[in-house]
Length: 380
Ligand SMILES: *[C@@H]1O[C@H](CO)[C@@H](O)[C@H](O)[C@H]1NC(C)=O
Ligand SMILES: *[C@@H]1O[C@H](CO)[C@@H](O)[C@H](O)[C@H]1NC(C)=O
Ligand SMILES: *[C@@H]1O[C@H](CO)[C@@H](O)[C@H](O)[C@H]1NC(C)=O
Image 1: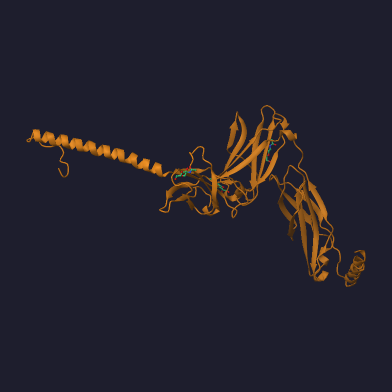
Image 2: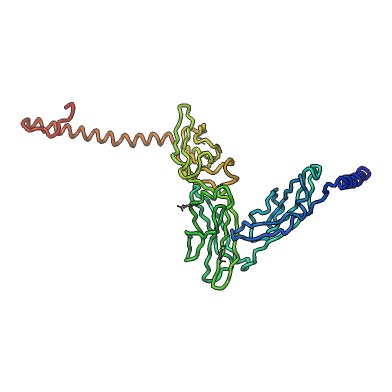
C-alpha cells in the first residue's frame, strides 16, 4: 500500500509551486475579530467578524465564509455558508456556545480551486447562576389544537422558601424577550404557563427560559428551544358514526376535530374491540390513516363491536406530536333491536291510551247526544 501513496507529496508540492509561480494565492488568511454577543433573546446569539486582511487584493475572486456552531457536548457542528459578516444563531445557553469560522476563496485568482483558510474559534458562556439542583424539573409543553401552548414544570430539588419562577420567551419577530402573561399556580408558586397567539412562532425556533429567585438566592435558569408544530396535540376526532353495511361490514366515519389544526396535517389511528364489553375490550389496531372513513370486516357478527379513533399530526406537517384523546362508539346488532323496542313501547302505549280515550268520549256522546263533543277527532 505504502508505495502507492508516495507520489502524492511531490504532486502537492508541484501544485503549490505552480500556483505560486502564477501568482495565484494558495492560502488565504482567516477572518479577524470573531466575536459572540448575547442580545438577551434566551438562546439566539449574535456572531460577528471582520474580513481577513488584504482580502481586497484578490480581485475576480469571491470570498465566502464557512461558519460552524454547536453547544458544548453536541457531537456534530451545524454548518452555514455565508458572505455576510454577521449571523444570529441558536444555542442552548445552559451550555457553552462554540463557533468556528474559515475563509473560502475561489475564482479566477485561484484558478477556480477553492482555497480554505485556517479555522478561527470562539466560545461564549453565559455567567453561571445558581446551583444545578435549583433548576426546575420535568419541563414539558403541549401545543393544544395549534391554539395555545401550555408548559408545566416542577420546582427544582433545591427549592428555597418564597421561591418565584418566571417564564420568558422569544421568537423571531419579537423585539425582545417577553414574560408569560398567564401563569398556572400551585400553592402560590408558578408551575406552568399558558401562551396564546403564537401563530407567528410556528415553524421556527421558540426560545424559552424558566428562571427564578428566592430572596437573595438566584436559581439555575432552564433554557430550551421549542418547535411548536412538533408539540401539537389535536382534540379528539368528532362525529364518529358506526353502521353495518348489507355485507355485514362495519362502516366507520368521523370528522376532523375543530380548532386551528389543518385537517391535511392529521393522521388517525383506528382501533376495534369486538365481542367484548366496553370497559374490558381488547383493542386491536386496524388502521393508521389520513382518511376519515374506514370499512372493517366483522369477525363475529352477533356481538358488540366498539371502535375508537384518535388523531395526531402526520409526518407531512411535523416530525412528532401527541395523540389526541380517543373518540369511541359501540355498535351492536342486538342493541339496535333493543333501541327499536324502546321506541316501540311508548308508541304502542300512547296509541292504546288514545284509543281508550276515544272510546270513552264515544261512550259519553252516546249517553248525552245533545252535548257537543269537545274534540272532534279526525275520522270519528
Ligand atoms: C398577537 O400577536 C401579534 C404579534 O405577533 C400582535 O400584533 C397581536 O396584537 C396579538 N393579538 C392578540 C389578541 O394578542
Ligand atoms: C429571568 O430572565 C429574564 C429574561 O432574560 C430576565 O429579564 C430576568 O431578570 C431574569 N430573572 C431572574 C430572577 O434572573
Ligand atoms: C361468534 O359467534 C358465534 C355464533 O355466531 C359463537 O358461536 C361464537 O362463540 C362467537 N365467538 C366468540 C369469540 O364469542
